[in-house]
Structures are given as structure tokens and as C-alpha cells.
Amino acid sequence: MLHPAIKVACIDCKLHGTCMPSGCSEHDLERLDPLVSTRRKIRRGQTLFTHGERFTSLYAIRSGFFKTCLSTEDGRYQVSGFQMAGEIIGLDGIVNDRHSCDAVALEDAEVCVMPFDRFEEIAREVTSLHTHVYKIMSREIVRDHTVMLQLGSMRAEERLASFLLNLLHRQHARGFSRSELILRMTREEIGSHLGMKLETVSRTFSKFVVEGLLQVKHRHVRVLNAQALQALANHPAHGHGATHAA
Image (tube, rainbow, N blue to C red; front, side):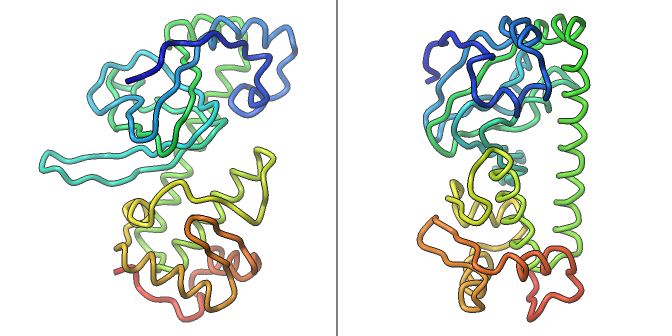
């Protein structure tokens, strides 16, 4: 069950420069306060919204980590993405006024709730807000294209290398380490997202450890050879010893 809404001011949040338009003046941030005036807590394993649910709001992740999942009528599902603090989720609901996926908390999380009707109203006054949402949508399209490339042509090592580097880049943009991360998702969830079997994910992690690319202890990952990892992600045709993602 979602916790009761808590009052919060956008201007007081250290992440406002990530989830809100960059370069906003203090005056503009104050005008945005009515948009993000409440936040909610979601416990690990609970859903923020579900497939088919009526779309009413966008959500800025204040803390925690989410996965979005697509499901079929026969019960199968695929992880379509992972979202972290400073990112906005819920955009999938705009097109049909219904959410097209489930958003599940991978750890205890907190989100700022932004009612979409209020969002549109305020965006008429703070024009940079419209531009910011276009950039978010464009970023999602680019990510979708990257996943299509991974599923269509990359091998196991290339997919995992690209995935880890993407997480590190997004994490570093929020002021965290560029070489270490804690994986909030399971190996099975990584495999679902990358189109790889669990055994292949585990085998590829082990291969990276043996080759000196990574140090892995449970969910803690440290990159020891970023250059080699980047080479795998950037030049798939030259991936050394690559195996298929079966």
C-alpha cells in the first residue's frame, strides 16, 4: 500500500537539477512547487502503477530504483527498463490515457507525484518544462533503439558491457562513482531486459571477472578495466571471445 502523501518543495530537493529543466531560476522553481507538492513512498516489491491503469500523473523518482515490465495474457513478462533517482516515469500513459506497463519498486522508494493536468497548466508558464519533457521522451526513444540493437545484433558480452556502462553513466551524472555500483536488480531481471537466459548472465559476469574487467561481490560491482568494457560496447564486431546470448 502506498504511504500517505507528504508535502515537499521542488526548490529544496537536491535532484531538481536532474528531473527538472536545467538552469531553472529560483523564481521558476518556486512556480514549479505546485506541480511537485506531494511525494509518496513505495515499499520494495510494490507497484507504483500497473498495465491498464488510468493515467493521471507523471512521477519523479526522489529515491530508490524501479523496473518497468511488459506482460502478455499468458503470464509471460519482460523487463523493459530500469529507472533510478532523478528520472521521470509514467510517460507511457500519455498516448492512450492508460499505462502500458507495470512500474515495480526494486527497493524502498519515494516519488514526487506530478498530476498531468497541472503539469500542462504550469508548462504554459514555464516553457522550459515542455522542452525538458521532449528531451526525456527523446532519451527514452534512444534507449529503446539501444535495446533493439542489443537484442538484434549484440552478443552476450557486448550486451552486458553496454548495460553496465549505461548504469554507471546515469549514476555518475547524479554525483556517484563512475566505477562502482550496487545492482538493485537480480541477474534474472537483467537477463529479461537483455534477452539473455539467467545462466548466460551469470556465465558472462564470471567471464568478466576471470578476464579482469570486473570485481563482483554479490550485488556490488567494481569496474577494473573500463577501457576493455567500453571496447566491447563500442566495437561489437571485435569483441574478444564473445558468445551468443542463448
